Image (cartoon, rainbow, N blue to C red; front, side, top):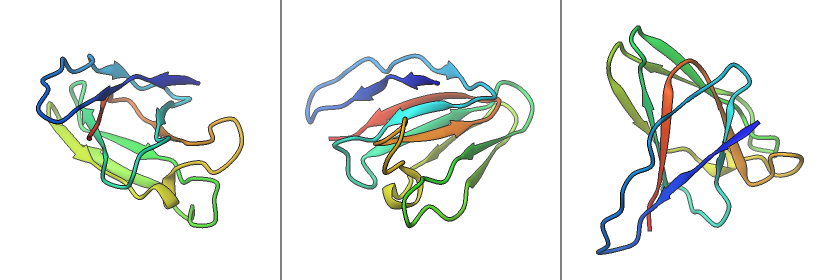
Length: 111
C-alpha cells in the first residue's frame, strides 16, 4: 500500500502544499506517527461525481467502526479523526491510518 506524503506546517512559515493523489481500491496509508488528535487535516477532493471514501477502523481496542465520508460532486471535504479509533496500533501499517475510495487526497500536518 502506498503511503501519502504529508505537508508538514511550521508556525510562521509558508510551505507549498503537496499535490493531491488519487485514492485506489486498496487504499492509501496516512502517516500519523508523532501526531496528536486534530493535528492531521485530511482533504478529500471529488474527481467529478459524488463519492464515498472510507477511513478504515484501526486495529487497536478503540477501532470499532469505519468512517464513511461523502464527498459531493466537484467539492472538497476536510476531516480530522481520533487516533485511537482509526490509527493502527500494530502490524504492517502501525502508526498509520488507511483511507479507501475514488477521490483524490492531500494531507496537512499541523504544528
